[in-house]
Picture 1 (cartoon, each protein chain N blue to C red):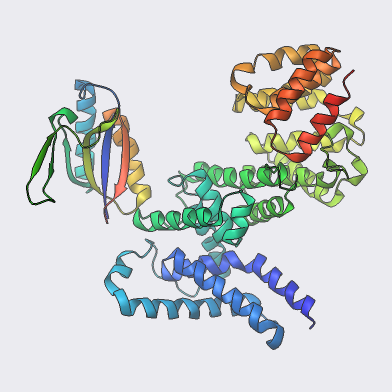
Picture 2 (spheres, chains in turn orange, cyan):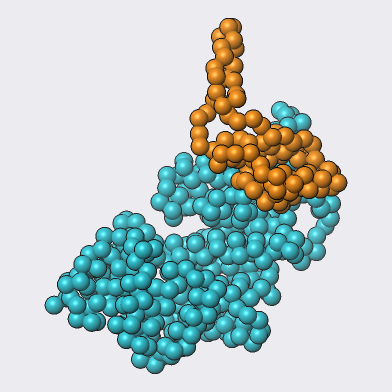
Length: 107
Length: 413
C-alpha cells in the first residue's frame, strides 16, 4: 500500500539547514526500513505553469492552479502496511521537516 | 410464545448480538459495508421469521449464520461483476484468516470494530455516527434524529467514513500496547459525547433528556468495560455515567423544567445505579493507581450522591477533587465547575471572582452566564444577575434548562 505524504507550507521560505539535516535522517530511516519509494522538494508555486489541452489547443497559464496561503512544498511517497503505520511515519516526517503534512492513499 | 415475547427476544438479540455479528462478519469478509448490510438483513429476517417459527434456541448463532449467508450471496453477486477491484478493496487485516474462534477471541472482534470506528483519522462526529451504527446498531434515521441532521446527510457521512476506512486502509485491529492508552481515551471521548448529548439534549423540539442516547452510551461503555476490565478510565467513565443516569428522573420536573442537584428529590434517585456506580468508584480507589479525568469526575459525582441531603455534601472533598482535576486538565470548563463548589465552601463572593476570570474563554458558554447569574443573585446583585440570566437563556440549547433559567430570572426581586 502506498501513500502520498504531502508537505504543506504555510510560511514563506524553504527548509533551513537544521530542517534539511533532520529530513535526511528521516529519509535514511525510510530507506532502511523499506518504506521509501520516492521523495522530493518542489519549487515555489510561482514557478508553476498550468496546461489545459482539453480543447485541442494547449493553453498555458502562468502560476499555480490554486492560489492559496498554504501550498504543496514537497512530498514523500511511502510504502506502509496500513494507515496506522503511515500516520506514525508522517508524524515523524512532520517533526523532521517542521511542517504540516497530509497523508493520502493511492488507489 | 406470544408477540410481545418475540419482540422482546428480537430487541434483546439486537442489543446483545448486533456488534458481535457485524464484527465477526467484518473479520471474515474484510468489509464493513458487507458486514453492516448483512447484519441488518439478518435482523430483518428474524423480525419476519421468529414470530412464525419461534425464537431459535441460540439467537446469536442463528443471526450470525443467517448474516453469513446473506454476505456470501452479496459477494457472489458482486464478484460476478468485478472480481479484481473487490479484492483490492478488501479491508486490511494482518492476522491469519479466522480459525473457529474460542469465546475470548470473539470478544476481541468487537473491540477491533470499536477501535476502527473510533480511529483518530476520522472526524469526531464521524466516529460517533459510525460507532452508533456499527457497534450499537442504531439505524441511520435514528442517528440522524439524535444529532438533528438530515437523514441523507447522516447516510453520506457514514458512507464516506466507510469509504475512507477502505481506501486509506484504516486497520481492523486492536492497537498495540504502546498506542492503547491514547486510543482508548479516543473511544471513551466518543462514548462520553454520545452520553452528554443524551443527558443535555440540544434543540427546541427535543426532549430535554434523551434516554435512548444515555442508555446506548452506558450499554457501549459496559461492553468496553467487559472487554477491558482492568482499564481504570473505562471503569471511571462507566461509574460517571451510572451516577449521572441515576439522577435522571429527578433532574427534570413534571413541568419539564431542570431541577438542580441541590433541589432534586434524592429519594427519586435510582439506588441500583447508584450502588453500581459507587462500587466502581471504590474499586478504582482501591486500585491505588493515579486516576484519570473520568475517574475523578466519577469520584466527584460519588461525593454528591453519597449525601442524603444536599446540606450533608462534603464540599471540601469536592473542591479537593476538582483541584486534582485542574492539575490534569486545566480547561476553563473544569475551572467553572470548581468555582461552583467553591461557592458552597468559601461563599459566592470568592466563587464569583474565580468565575469572572474565565470571561475571555467562556463568554459564549451558557453555563458560564448561568453560574454568574446564580452567584450574583445570592449576593443580592439582582440587576446584574438578571442580565446574566438573559445571556444564559439566549445561549442555552436545552429546553429544560431554558425553562429553569427563565423562572429563576423572573423570580428576581
